[in-house]
Amino acid sequence: MNRRRSGGTPRRASRLKRVLVVLGTVVTVFAVTIGGLFAWLWTDAPVSTVGKAPFDNALAIPPLAESHVDKDGTRVFDLRMRAGETEFEAGRKTPTWGFNGTYLGPTLRAERGEKVRVRIRNGLDEASSVHWHGMHLPAEMDGGPHQEIAAGGTWSPQWTVDQPAATLWYHPHPHGATEDHVRRGLAGMFILDDERSARLGLPKRYGVDDLPVVVQDVRFDGARLDGGRGFLQNVGFLGDRTMVNGTLRPYREVADELIRLRLLNASTARTYAFGFPDDRSFSLVGTDGGLLERPVSHKRVQLSPGERAEIVVRMRAGERVMLRSFPQDNYGDGWQRRFGGGDDSFDVLELRAAGRLRPSPELPAVLGKLEIPDGANAVRGRFFELKRSGINGRAMDMGRVDETVTRGTTEVWTVRNDNGMPHNFHVHDVQFRVLEVNGAAPPPALRGPKDTVFVPHGTTMKLALRFTGPADPDTPYMYHCHLLYHEDEGMMGQFVVVERGQRAGAPSGHAGPGNGHARDHEHG
Image (tube, rainbow, N blue to C red):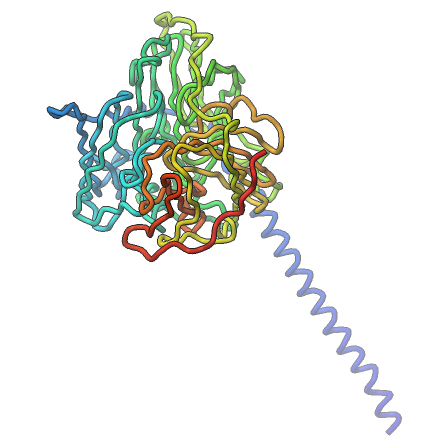
């Protein structure tokens, strides 16, 4: 018996050794496979269209929307939301949505002090809404998720334009479906003019030396627009190509020394850093809510979804220059930059200068005074923690009023992002001033009137906002992340404007507001 046991031990040891060798081989193969897969994902993640294709399509310029003036002086526009097909590439029809057409919409234009009314018909087979992004107007006219238009329905908001000249825009805002509706093509510019801007020597001939530049990223699945999110893309949809005004690979022939570009980031999740390959400087003259106090020289301007910038670039006769989006280093860690779009680069729009250029006047040294609060008379502060799961730990609830502000007062809002990924922050109805970024004065690009601001991971901002009404305790405005996937997931809250001593009501058609409120901070 002892001989049998001693003879069996080597065999068992041999079998164990073979098992360990096989197991080690499997583990090694698995590790190599996983490592190879990760290496492939890491190296394949960045997207670049730089120099990949000729820009051979003439840039489409959205038409100025037709309007008429009623007897009472109200300027009236008509918009129809509709489905259709668009040939982004010749011979390939893509299902799309648009206003008054198959993709995007006309540019609405009005002057400060004008009464406007927009008659909207929803010709889609599902409900949507039309939000006037950046506009100061009554809450019931705002076009947020509480002003949804049923399929086949109509809505006619009206208000008086009461803010400076600016480049605004309009887009859907249905709760839970905003990303999809914007990605399909529902967006357009809304330009405001005033007497001050009319007197300034800025390029102002629409479509000639003053160009609308509506930038979107797209990806095609055959002829269809693909809306799927890639592996590890937690910011939302990121496309592998860009379009301007619905034009792939666009070029624009220009014949003036100075060209004004009204840049609008109408993408749903992608942030861009616009500039030119030769690192030429350009003049930043306006941000979301209007003109700066004076032009500021820049080589890059970063715009997250929903942000706008007006830049003026000097052209040289006969040259071709590419507007490009460059990689960005403020997305958080390397992982977020790699998989969240921060390492990507795009050729966006080629400007082709004529052989002889019309001379342009020099830009004014002073553009005017800002009409945004400086925070000096703030009556209180509020705090907002940005997380993908919700703002201040709560997901959006249509029946809950999160914040109540008093008409005519100024507040300071502190916004913080330690969520490990990029976010931004948009507030309806108001234009705010950025007071601080991580305890320091904001950079020049953030010193103009803003309604949307990029808040990268590790960033704390202080914003000064003034609420001038009108009061409406039952109809809320929104504040939210404008990375639309995050907004749809619930990164949004609601506030109402009330008269002093008045309490918030219940949002129309919803249960009464909850008891929770953002944490208060005394302003000192």
